[in-house]
View 1 (cartoon, rainbow, N blue to C red):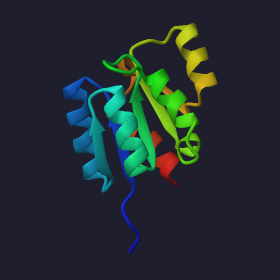
View 2: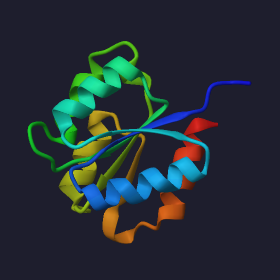
View 3: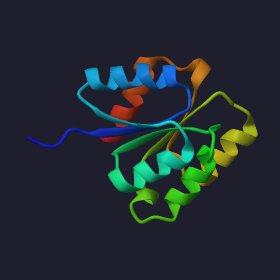
Length: 124
């Protein structure tokens, strides 16, 4: 039997993290969490999750800085990153695309099932 897939959720919104964590575990996906960008980067580089769900606006290091650091790493430049954000401004989307994210989800528009299905697509 193969190892279960792992998703890293990097977000300072604790309630959202808990809900996502429960949903992924129900789907048989292991979950790592981090509540700020610095912790998220450290966890990503040490644990090598299969997919990263990454908030943009966070304490200590924002999501763009996390992505920039990941792009400098041999493993990190290939990991799928799905941004979760409250901002859908053109500037935010453009910056996200140039920084290496795989997908962009606006928190207010997303449903939990959508997030899970997007992560599963990246795992296949």
